[in-house]
Image (cartoon, rainbow, N blue to C red; front, top):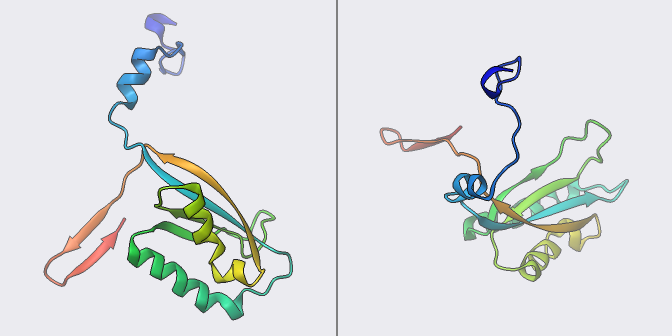
Length: 138
């Protein structure tokens, strides 16, 4: 390995230093969010409550509380109806209150667990077309 490079041309693994970590993370977003992991109870029929659930989620979105939400794929042995919601709120207790008001939870069709999450890296692609007033998300 010449010059600290492996046979594949990648830099050799060296231990991180505090300076490296500080330099790489100093400009990160560090936005505190709350992730709600919802689990559908086996055999639950969510469809009769789906419109109410969607109305609730859209209302949270319009208030600026909902960052992202959606179902997990039922493939790979997952339970149909499991999902994830990411909330912009200031505390675990507020996130728990919001999650507990979801019509799927109110009607006993889902349970949930909440994790505090810090958003550091990522990107968002957004195109605003002024000519026809449309927005595209990449």
